Image (cartoon, rainbow, N blue to C red; front, side):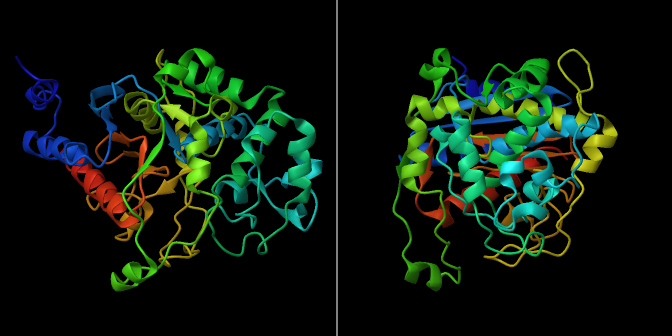
Length: 387
């Protein structure tokens, strides 16, 4: 009897994929499952608006839902692009003009585009997910936040803080709950039934629990590898494992709490190439998509590796030969764009080949070097599946 893997490989040529490269990608995707390190994973690839294949490993099914963490940023950002496209929001607007409660402690001059590009100056501002649905508590957080540095002067990744503000902007501009806006104006129109920003009760049974595997490297091990020691951030094990709770899943953390299957996430990225929807309607015009992918961070670099940040409006752009430091593969083109997520979630599209690729796993490897190497390997193999 033919296995699912054999079936996918058997259709590779008619799908325009190079068989031996696709086999190498599937084999590499399965490696940590076979080694017993990861309990589950999903992989998917799409092109020309269609899903080429989706495959699940270990305890996952193709319709299992996995928390995609910061890959959610692309979805929330794409909702805000609709407002920019319709002239309801300008990226040069000051946030304080939209959210008066935000105008405290030097944050008065922060602009909308600085929220998207992680140049707003409040990367570590605290916010508990369950505070979102209590306006008094959420506005209280906004007003208490302080700057770490002057807005616009440097790049430092904001794991969640800036996206809470973008979600609030969506609500202020539309008078609609941002989760409903995303569902009705993007996911529904694209026919994506396996992506959620705010997981409903009836879908909880499809969500795989997050877990941690492996051992973290010591500071000496990082130094011996010639690598900087990663800084402490809000992305702690406690914070990640909180997404196993139904009340946290329901919140739909706009910068890191979406749930998806790899197949639907790959199809979402197809829409970010073409702007189209399931019914042929253009959600984002070619002009909008071209503009939101324009790098806005200039010569600003990340703090760890001193590589160009290459940030567009909620997306990371592949760019130069240092693209692997930004989560892309060695064989991605400079025009590739996407946004990966904590724990090794991969999500990107490459206009050069028309491919979009996703890899999801609910298990987070404490060994960040091994996890990063896996991501580069998978992306490099995926990007080379088309000549």
